[in-house]
Image 1 (cartoon, rainbow, N blue to C red):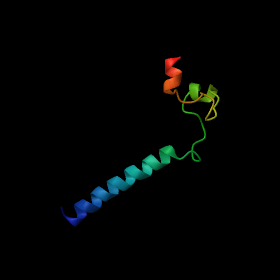
Image 2: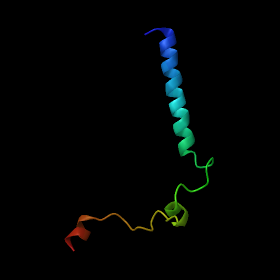
Image 3: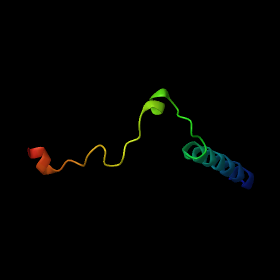
Length: 59
């Protein structure tokens, strides 16, 4: 691979990484993506309950 081809490939990878970073950056875009996202309240980590154990399964 020539140096210019490596450089072009790296530029494409860098652009893709930059686009993905912009997509997941919550501080940049605060508007909801859909009506469902806008009307759904965020839940706490423990709001859905814990993980089922074998004892729970046997009951």
